[in-house]
Image (cartoon, rainbow, N blue to C red; front, side):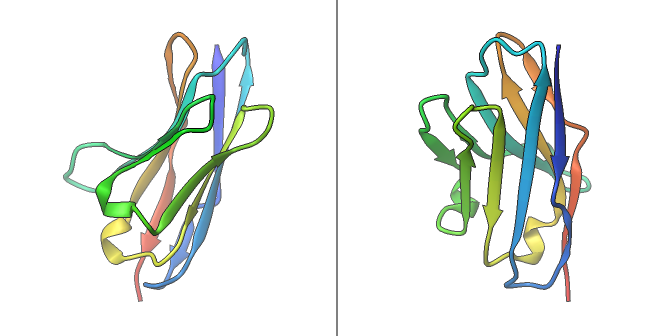
Length: 114
């Protein structure tokens, strides 16, 4: 089993920044892909960004140029730097990891509002 613990959500004004973190622990042999998904009220969960074990990132078109995903050297912690936040970025953000199975964090609320 792999446990994912997220931190860094909160309330921010439009144009502001937040940094999300997600640390993996437990029965980790190797985590291949880590990433972030989000789900806004009344909408389906969608990919925000993900990064492979080799450090290759992939972004949703809606966040390209504003969000940056990264991983620590051990590969068990993933970060999401979110800049130029917009009200439409408001959602619960979920950390994701693939290590032979899919694992999800409990979610952290991000609210962008003036």
